[in-house]
Image (cartoon, rainbow, N blue to C red; front, side, top):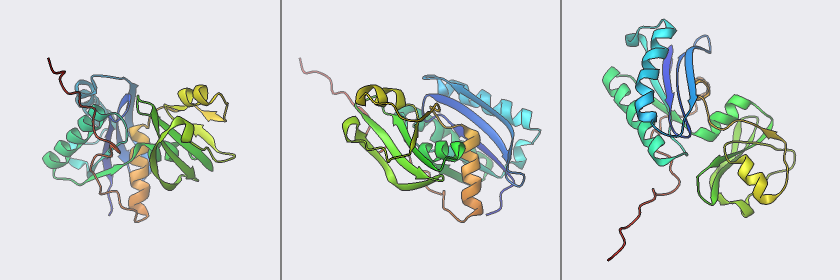
Length: 216
């Protein structure tokens, strides 16, 4: 599939970002990234408007929408996907998605990398990569069960907590969340190489927290 311009967004973790990307030149025309725990729903639309304006591309010339479908935080994933689906539908263009851990690995481009993402619970999202290719699947693991392969560098929003709990230092790259620039770069790479990124279902790996009311 040949796409010229893709607009990508991400609100899946503790950040909000948007990017207009030129697939033929393989570069970002305009992008914004902000670390923010809440209110992504209020921030993302003005951010989209700003990057489209800064890119110099007319909105009608955008060929596709890209988004990160998780894993991450439940509300953030929902905001990102619903915004991306609305844009895709309203502009009559395809929608593509990639996962957050792969986008981080793609951006850092290390030969041996483990990405550890925060769940805000006891467990951690974990995936291991070799030259940006995921080995196996993303797993939800308790801290004591996580095994980092020898020589792997670790990165992600859960690294500090992980190293404190296991009381061990690893080679570490400080990268908490993916940028939309990395998300769209990975989508472009996948499209060029015949790798599917059509699965736009949310990647939760678990159900949302639902608290039942206490019985009187």
